[in-house]
Length: 369
Image (cartoon, rainbow, N blue to C red; front, side, top):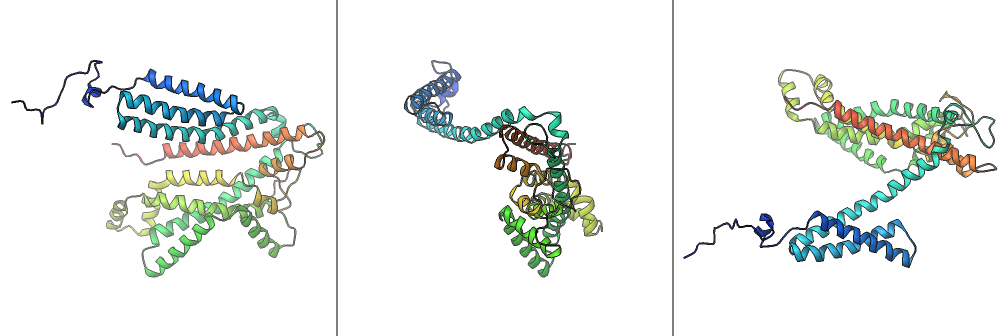
């Protein structure tokens, strides 16, 4: 009498693959086979697209992906079985969607870098466009305007956003009145998160028109418009970071008789400082490239103006927009400056994202002993 119900077959398959034999004598696709299927699908997809429509990278990836999914399913089902074949098809679909999402990103980066590098020189960063027609000139006035307006926006938005988030997390549930106020604040933050940027610009220009005169243009107006867009981002990111702080830390502080405000200052905020700084940095990167609100609030100028409370200022998005929308004759120098401004703006945003990651890495609370 043989007992096979609870026995485990430890024999090797003829190919020496224990795992494959444990699945019922089926093997496993090798790396060489998988890459061969990928290469064959790319070649076949490229030939089909070229013959039918002419070469296109996006269509080649889509057709090659369809061929690959069919081919890998057939090969994997024969070698590994139906379950593993379905798994490889799903993996192929996810990878294809990732590659399709990557194509426009790579295309944008390549286009901006290749077109903008021509005017990425010292003159571009040290000269304005005052009195310049045609070649030459630079975007010094636009770079300084962008940094000043963004700095003012950060100075206004960060304290408001952080204190609002502290109220929502630390005080919003302490009483019925606080709860009502917190729900109202959450609602308005959600609404502000989705408003179009041009609405923020129109709000700011309407506000300052009441204070000054019709047609007023100043850097501070643009900063107020960007503040409307930045505050909800800061509130949301800070709120999420504060909610991640364990309640045990607060309770331990309260048990020692420490008041709430001191607990927030000495326990909660230091614990969440890395996440808060990261969220603030990403919020700055989100508003620094806004164009629509600055068109109606700041205007444009060819001269350098470092006073945000007096007269028009130029920013990199506006500089790039007018270089494309109203070029001179010949238009090539204007387009070169436009691409260089776009490249500069993209590098600033990239630096901000790198700073956010560094802050998150080095200032996060250490959990190891």
